[in-house]
Length: 272
Length: 315
Image 1 (cartoon, each protein chain N blue to C red):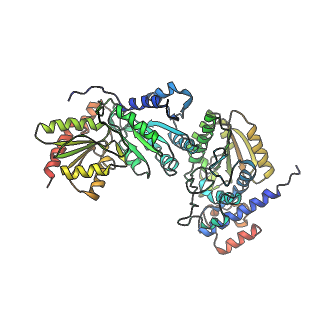
Image 2 (image 1 turned 120 degrees about the horizontal axis):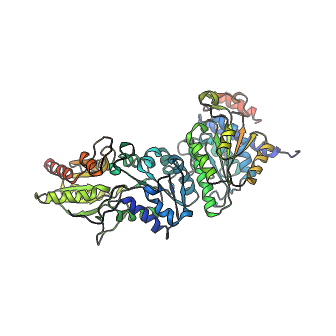
Image 3 (image 1 turned 180 degrees about the vertical axis):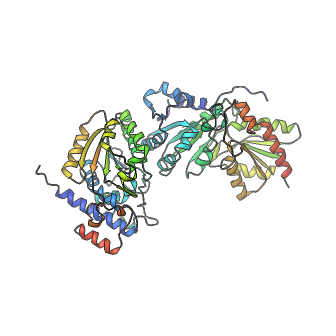
């Protein structure tokens, strides 16, 4: 205890501002689930992962796959904050000719390790990267963020089976448990819970945390690195829309952009 | 015609993987069908480079994409129905969209699957794969050419869909000057009255049809179009100009497949009568392969019949 996470908190705040800037200038996109993973992505890119912003394709880098690809605004905000590309470019999100596509495009965006967007596919590709590291004895790790609604896709569990079968202890799956999907609460649309017991049954080491508590996030990633012979799933309880008052736990902000008044309110909420 | 050296293209595929595994650095993935797809031949020789993904083809395709994203070459196998059909969206989004260097070896294509019947007889894979930008589609005529296909796929940078069959087919490409190149059709026999453009299993039947037509005084050219995408427009346009009529032959639905591709190409540059021999928008069914080929019109006699009709349609 006693360790200060002020710097990370400030970075995460700026990442949230970046999310709002992107979505506002796109006039569409997915702010709710982007805001819920802002702290986790900030920790990954500023503390956990070994990456080189000036050499994004560096072979020895840790890999990140945003399996819940619709929350690309969060990934772009954290990548630009980390120096992969200019922050100003966030305002081109979803525009024609922008390299910031509506969903992550590994061919066009520096720092994006896998194209994603169709739910359930990203976690499988993360498994492929982790297996590849095992094949050639590389020591990089692979991280993937999964949506809780996304876990309704059967392929997620095919991938989970695969990860445990090949003992991918270099793979860390983070489940963003914000509890809401487009059509409503996940437990009402198609209840995928309990995630912890499911991942455990599939052969994962499971850690449950508050996804906005940096001390807990840090402890979870440290623990994951000590686990041998099995992959780790971090079940991160989060708040959809976290940090923007009117978006918090509000399903209507899953896939809608704020207009000017709400945009200004969001920036105010985020201390801008 | 008397044929010898019969072998299924899947045999050629499995043997090629095992042979080329010596000189090319790739890994092989399968979905619990290694014995049938013949990736088992590779597995036996290089067990540490073979990864069974279980009966989960969608996951397997996206896993392959992840492996390719790290710089390795994955060759991923299943039956065509599951590789192109069930996993279409994973092939499209995980592999095709980022243009990753994944080689898909799809076996048991078409109705020559035989007794397993309609659920396993994939007559749609060419149509599906053809709509994916950047996807190369290779469909060898015999087991010998299957080896060339694997070799060319490994040399090519980008996604490749390789189509193989279950049923033994005679060797037709073991010729002195035969040269395989992606996107280049091969003239197997010259002719002036009509052209039979065939692919995959149908190529040897096209040669048989040519012989029957010759006895009636009709001179038929036979093309082996082993690459369906990118299609060799040049050889097709030349054939259209020089022979004035085309018959396409494929072991696939005539809608959306090879015949459709030829029609599209010629309609835009050199419209001539094109008749399509293939599965006529029907599902397959159980039966011995020869009976199925007969019932679905995938025969030399039917190709010859359509060739006669094509000739009569010429202006």
